[in-house]
Image 1 (cartoon, rainbow, N blue to C red):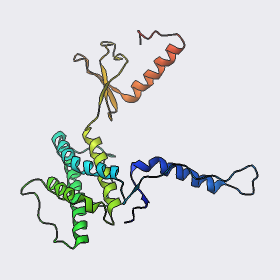
Image 2: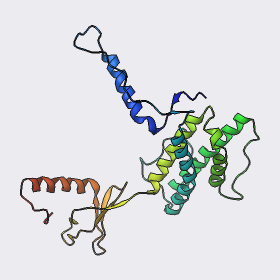
Image 3: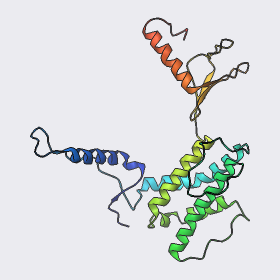
Image 4: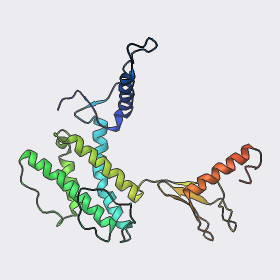
Length: 246
């Protein structure tokens, strides 16, 4: 592939946004309107890659390696039950679903990884994929194989699709396992009358705030907590409430 192409990664997000706005302005430009000036191209220069730049290649390598840990975390925290409606990944297959959402996720991850290995083997006219899982899990061994050939894979004709999918799966599994999510203290007191302590925390990605008072343990919906924050803030601005009371 040519070196002279913009990297498809997040490194060029601002460049792509600026180009999109410029093209939109060009489409709306009327050269017969004396009050309009022809839009000029944005001054932002893109990062170039082949097709990925060095920074994004490193991100893909790291994301691929961490998929192994994320898969293990997903299975370790699974409760053996399927999530409610609306929590499924949309895929092209209509196969039967197992009782375990985590089990299905792991199966789809394995299918995705082995699919890319097969694609690269086909590209190189190598022997078809051998059986996996007798020395280590199929996910672990496939990730190790892909990592060993990653430099060549990221220069293959399907490099953009491969890198994009690895990063997407990494984001999805990170969200599902809450890996790397921070738990933050919240400034308001617990709203439950029997508690009222400054023991509220929120873990990134959760839809509720919890009270860490062992005698309370309240779970307040995040939307409810945020609405209460706005209400108290407005009351303080009007001088109706002291910060200490809030």
